[in-house]
Amino acid sequence: MIICKICGHEFSDFKFCPNCGTEVASKRVEIISDEVVLKKSKAKNTGFPGEGKGIAALVMGILSLINSLSGFGIVFAVIGIVLGSLGVKESVAFGFENDMGKIGKILSIIGLIISVICLAIITVCLIINFNYFSAMF
Image 1 (tube, rainbow, N blue to C red):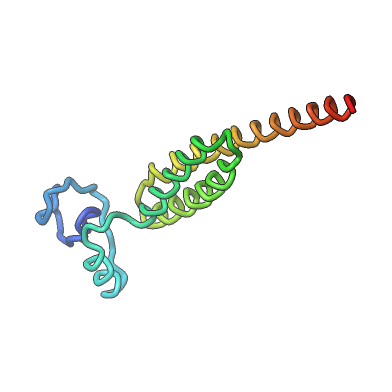
Image 2 (cartoon, one colour; image 1 turned 180 degrees about the vertical axis):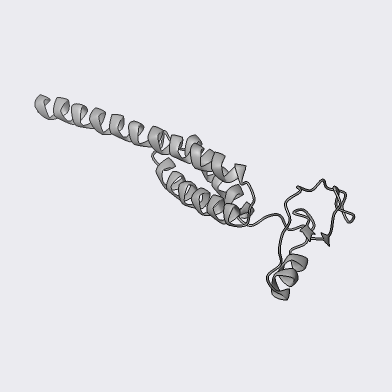
């Protein structure tokens, strides 16, 4: 028995899903219980597991890059890394690819690195300026 990854329709020995027309892989899925079938039918056209976390990770990654110069990028980056990791892990467990989660995680890591470097530069500049002005008085 084959289950369409897009619509969740169950069928056998077709190259395309008779319900939505999506080309399916030749991999067969064995259904363990009726409960799994019920969950699949309720999840029609709602995306794949971990997709929401992947989208959120992508948004957090972009926000971490935008806010990396202000220091707030660290907060967005940490949230993006966590959501990206969870989304990818959840998707892989169900046999899906979560590219948005991967890209969001990468952008969050880059944003974190830039934020840390900017905060280090700002800290060094503040220390130098403080020492300069304290020597004047």
